[in-house]
Image (cartoon, rainbow, N blue to C red; front, side):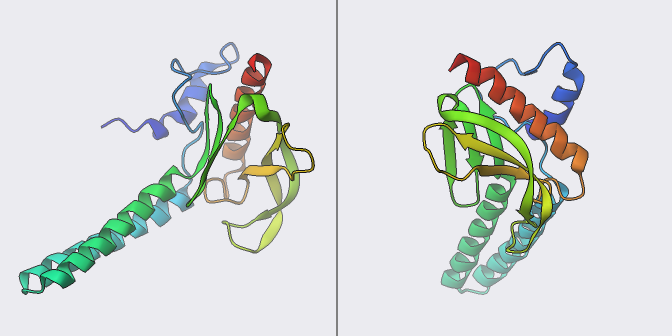
Length: 186
């Protein structure tokens, strides 16, 4: 089974300097970096918990309590959906624009509305928690709204890049290349 998110970094590494956007189908949405170990670990723990709940559903249904088994099955389905959504979170790019996928929301900004995508030094949230630390963030500045705060797309302390500063630099550079390429055409 092909796992395209595992080959994202290798595509940029193998492309060299002569090919800025190493993908053939640029209309397909893709995340130009791999999910980080914190994100994958949290999703794995959710899937582990879901397996225990599914086992409980089978035992409960075998004991004759079908409504209890159905509730356990529903809880396991929610846990699996949460794990999959957790793995999809991040910044995605395509020829259509820039997409920021969060746990409950997804926002897409067409390249015509992107004024600049840049890396800045600022206080960032540590693993999405309220605590802030000094770090870097890749921010999106939209050109269609004046007075809006820059939207952070990636940070050095989120679940994808905590403890991996070179992966953050590579991902930020990749998204900036996409932005530079498609803002010129928009």
